[in-house]
Image (cartoon, rainbow, N blue to C red):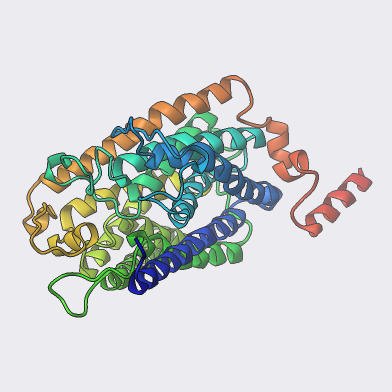
Length: 457
């Protein structure tokens, strides 16, 4: 059947929108690289930038071969837990998925490994990065994505079968699917490796190990902020979808609102972190504010499309205190995460999942998941009078993600540890990964200083 001119234009506009959103999400890899590089010591800058490149490259291959199929493959043996077709993109484009959809989902997948890399920075063997990155993006993450984002997933709010608690878990852009997965993986990696040499003194008190370049941290934060406009609004997949019974509203309305809620949550979290840390440490800290902003973005990512702007401000306010509180707790427990990734992505991601169950608005849920069909009725936020159905599904999502990532990534990191291919030696760590594993420093000044020291000896 010949496609009409109007349908062709609609498909073209929606494809361009999804591709552009994919490019924005991919820019976040540059943001992660700059943030990570600035947050570690100068002697490890080259190593952390290399791991970010490898996360993208290795993740591309693993997601192409296996990940997309496990997440969205709906063959004759389709089931709610794991996909069974589209391996190596065989059968794509299909009636359900296009190349642009694959590219968008790929950009999300490689972001997960970048989150985990930050937790185990400055002390991990490069070979371990290759192994965990392939496993995480090719298997662990895609299974969670299927549960919640595939129309066949057992937790999905757009499932073709019965919805869990009549609702399904709403995780629109991935506070749980992306950030909690990466945060929990990083938690286990950091726990099994242990803290960096010198991070805690003989009495267990923390010793400051600040990143070497605040400029890179701020640059990385703004790049991530920019990319988040593809991460959250882009998750609508299509922008040219008109809502029935209205003359001027459609997905473009939801996309715009989602960009606003994302901005408000991140901004609020940054401001609260600024003043909160000022009270606690006695000075204004740009690096803490950057992490606060990112914590707000992580938290709002779940409910960005289904909450009012005022609720996004509350989300960011609480996210800041979640991050501050978890950072204090981690120091007391002797937990060392150079990028605060487990606390930021795991803790704020968990809060974001619960927040959605409390504040999601029914009208917006119907717009996001039923194209604005006003004849549909769905459970919504508990605090808005929507009952316990949605919140119950959100709690289930949180628990199963923590359990799934723990039983997969925990044993994997432990096996690498037992095989002695996870952590570098003390001598190499003290010297720095750049010179001990990568042939030289990221900065010429450090290289020249090292040469002068050798001559003097």
